[in-house]
Amino acid sequence: MLMKIEGLSVNYGAIRALDDVTVEVRQGEVLSVIGANGAGKSTLLRTITGIVKPVAGTITFNGTNIKGLRPDKIVRLGIMVVPEGRRIFPDLSVKENLELGGHAIDDRSLKKELYTLILATFPRLKERLKQHAGTLSGGEQQMLAMGRALMGNPKLLLLDEPSMGLSPIVTREIFSLIGLINKEKGISMILVEQNAHMALEHSERAYVLENGRITLWGPSAEIKSNPGVVEAYLGV
Image 1 (cartoon, helix red, strand yellow):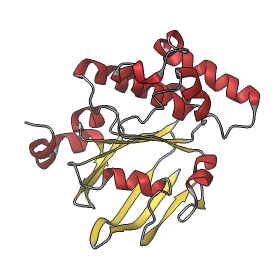
Image 2 (cartoon, helix red, strand yellow):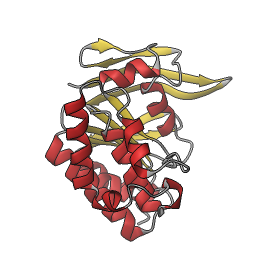
Image 3 (cartoon, helix red, strand yellow):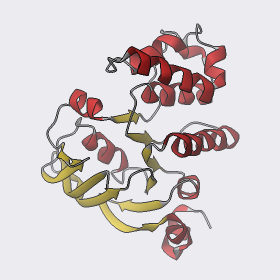
């Protein structure tokens, strides 16, 4: 078990954003968390990364309790996030964005290896290294956000709505790259998505989050065939 979240609760003022959430992440798997807008999916990721402080529960990563740690300490443990809306630095070049992603890596040979891997995985970024990131297409910006996170040499990659604002064709390309990275590098991932069809198609297991509570979990194929999930999330 790479990560275990138990009894996690988060408040935003008087609002309970997460309520007694328990989630397990296995080594090398892609785990999806699906749910409607406002269900608490992004809050879950923000709590894992230390940006939001829980009122109850524990988060154990590689056997270490990371609840209460500063975000920079959590990054150095190997947890990286690809944020919702990408949030690249638009006025910096593609190369500069990637270099910022590796700022916590002290080993120069490892940093060079990661950089080479990313350019091989995302050849379009290699073609645009000197280009300002803000001039990239939406799909290219998503690739850059993923590449920047990979520069941190993650053990666990958190992907927050990677399909947001992308066309169906580009979305399929991004999800294919997610699968490729997981398969070739064995990086565990938590995939948070409103596009339940794509999330369930590209993950081994899934949790359904509704109004801050986990209501269903299991193998993605079983979740995908659940009548309630089909009606609520798959548009059938």
